[in-house]
Length: 319
Image (cartoon, rainbow, N blue to C red):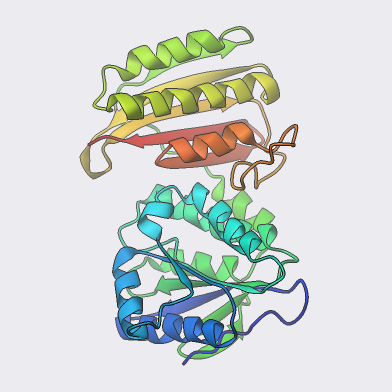
């Protein structure tokens, strides 16, 4: 059984990456972590892809999974921007106890854009959980994932579990540095792009334009409504916090990642990198409500916050 160090004291947070090479190593490492949490009577959340859920349940045997909250990460984390709130809410439900969480946000088959946003999530965990007694163990398939992904895991995790050894990560960097490195240029669309510039008083025009354009896509009526609502929230943020104006671009994507993309760019800044990644308080005057809604409505949200302004790229998959 691999032993993951528990929080060292009140307010301590532990965030190791577990590097595994096959399913046997995976079950031994993650299963050992879960058994240790159960033995310590600590609340456990396991959020991993479905096939790994099945393997872990089988390894724990009949009744061995009692007391564990199981979540399929391919559903929870389809948009990586939704994951952090779920982890925090689990910890909040067990306030006063050291929560144990397994979170596997990156697996072979993720698109490059999904991997980048999941890496952003991994960096921001360290900010969001600072000062909280919790352990978040993140497994990484070092055979199936690209070397660059594994290298980034070394940067986003203060500790590593590699070949049975628990070690500090010399490459670890703080969240601000990692997210700045992730804010590179977004790739340009391959095909035709529809474009609308908007300013104060133009929110209704944005909604009407987006709705009319989206009717010509393969989105279902429900998903079309979700996307238009997300676009409206993003444009409203532009008008309130992004200099009072912005640009909307729309296009479709074919192939295995078939869907519709909406990009909103304005002159704003992202003052709080956790905005939209934690459930906003009803009492809060700010709290990132618009960004929160956008993350819930879209299949993927790409975020770029640079000196050139703030960009959101919203993805909605088509059948």
